[in-house]
Image (cartoon, rainbow, N blue to C red; front, side):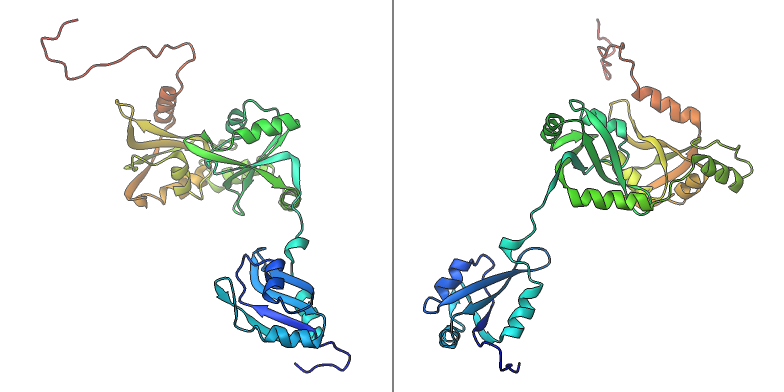
Length: 332
């Protein structure tokens, strides 16, 4: 680069620095130079870039600095190059310096819940945070309108916020939930995104569904059921919901257990409308984990039969056992 007549020749560029290098390290490296300013830059992710720009006192100091070219600072050798003022100003103009990085400001009333099962409802989250008083639960969604496994929760007080933080790594539906603070800028972005999403009138949805299929009575959404067979035994409700990614599931995925209380490989669930039923049936004989899954339509009675097995009344005692394989001569 050509030097302008008015420019100082008192600037150098250091490249290949160890990421943990500090201003003190660089001044020690340039121990025989009179250093005025050291600018350690970071990349877009806020991590050290390995570059530094140094302003020294005189051109004689520049010569001394260049003499250190390819000398080691800790385990790495450093490239030292002379640059002129215009280049120095341009390079550091958009650079983020560690001591100038914008401090993150967090909301004092909101927390983010991550790794939620996709079938989680507001009631599930309220139960998970049962010791806290909540103002609002906001389940976050993808661009396709599906839950993304995260939620933003607003708390009544500071004490409730602290109690919410204590729930970090607690379990909900067999998954460990992360509870973290939320940056104010993130909240603003979420609110801005939600303002741009048009509100949908449920009445219009019902009319649209009924018009797509004359055989479906107007307003009769949520009356469609499917059964999945051949599921991996370790498949969770969340994994089944992800398997049926573009289908709106009403309520919970009901995993059917055998007589021993272990997963049988079957599950039933309710869908929002006939369109979701058609989408779900297209997943027939597709693979979930390592198993080919059968997807077939079922009826309300079959669905309710398995729901009732899950819903044990609070007054019902769980004090009974069954013994199998007894010798015929066994007595009481």
